[in-house]
Amino acid sequence: MKTRRKENQSPFDNGPKSGAGIDSVRDVSWPHTNAHVAGSDKPVLITGGCGFIGINLAHRIMSGGQSVLLYDNLSRPGAEKNLRWLRQQHGDLVRIEVADVRDPHALRNAVDRASCIFHFAAQVAVTTSLVDAIHDFNVNAGGTLNLLEAIRAQDDPPPLVFTSTNKVYGGLPDVRLRVANNRYEPEDDTLRAGGIGEDRPLDFHSPYGCSKGTADQYVLDYARTFGLPTAVFRMSCIYGPHQFGNEDQGWVAHFLIRALKREPITLYGDGMQVRDILFIDDLVDAFLLAQANMNNRQVCGRAFNVGGSPANTISLLDLLRMIKALHGERPDVRAGAWRPGDQRYYVSNVAKLSAAVGWAPKVSVREGVGRLYEWLRDYALRPRRRAMSVDAARNSWSEVAHERVSRPARGVRQEAS
Figure 1 (cartoon, rainbow, N blue to C red):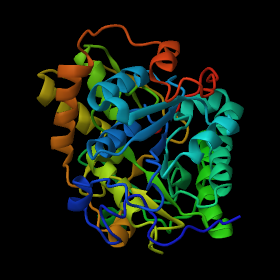
Figure 2 (figure 1 turned 180 degrees about the vertical axis):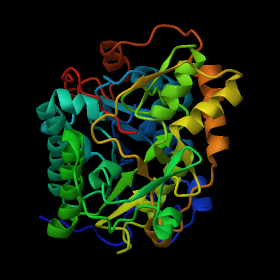
Figure 3 (figure 1 turned 180 degrees about the horizontal axis):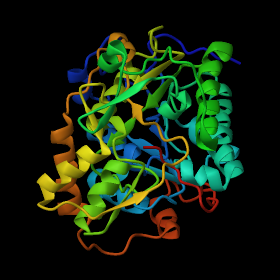
């Protein structure tokens, strides 16, 4: 069995070449002359494809004329709405496999048809992992291993980009912090200016951090041991349209949604926690650049910290002030205790990814939060017709009627953000 891809076989090769920059991937086209897709029209596979990150990536890819296979169990709130929107926008370019990453047979069937893969399906909340750690492990670690084995079984393995998390670095207890302008920041000048780099020792915290960290290491090791074309993104906070954030995950959207609904926000900790936040359009650029450059040794088998960088940081209190400016009133805020594994400060150093593929964030915090606020106000929170059920999605949007589609297990959230 072959385990190493041939040169120049990324389905992005006829778009951006190795070393391609952001401008080229934003206008990427998808001519089907590549050896991996020629004659078969193999779709791009996105696990968790109906979630926030998946739908934005799928929309960009299909806008260039390439079909996408969304592998999702539709259990995440908003997933069916996202799927319906994609279908309205792109018609037959949308293919759907309603299944679970814990089903190795359904996953193998999807991988058999894929030109390249983005793996976003996950249990996404630290709080959920504290309640049911076995479930969390089976989805995040077990599901990723199922996917890697399915890729390894291919004669010509499709390239994989996997979304990990900054939680693999733990609580950063050795990083000495100070308070400035009601925000935590490192005392160390270099760390404050550059952020957390990939040379930071791994220190998995919480069952969620352990399961995602396990998957992170499996993806890197399958590149090293079996020669699979893979890359890992250790992501900070991502936000943007089509994000239906909640108290456990997607905090920027969650704060905005609560404000628009005039509902109280629970602030866990003191609100001075700082994160770098990255607008979804910038993340999609990074995904496409990673796939386009997968033959580059600086990309294949590597892990990258991905976030807004020190140029795009915000505290919880900062966001509340920004919401007041956008919305005309400050949300009602209630105090909550610190939550396990909550980092007081995390900001990504993105220099490694920038050097490898020429990427950098373009959307500022103020612009991005404003765009998300307008999308939520004008689209997401307007009354709409009732969402399609999972069974209706199966009947209407299965790729071919005779194909077996696995029934998803209950309670699995197939999205990362």
